[in-house]
Length: 108
Image 1: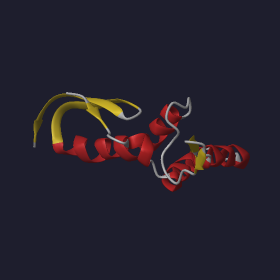
Image 2 (image 1 turned 45 degrees about the horizontal axis):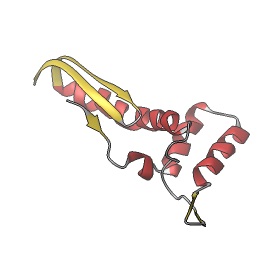
Image 3 (image 1 turned 90 degrees about the vertical axis):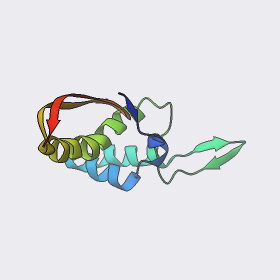
Image 4 (image 1 turned 120 degrees about the horizontal axis):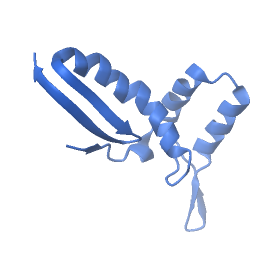
């Protein structure tokens, strides 16, 4: 079984992502550069569309930012909630918004 978080890259909360980045990054200029990158927007039919959420699709930074965001959201939930409810082996193999659960378990 595979899973893909539909619309993930279009809906990432900039505020939450920046909070997660601030946990490990102390360099304010780097954080500001990432914030500007997220807010830069895109051009559609000659008009600039500002971004209030999401990460730029196709950008080399988007998968890395997705991994950071989902580490604090999905991975933490899986490790704290799912693993505590099962007996046996279970793990979530994930890259960006795609994941594959691996299990050998029985539900308690």
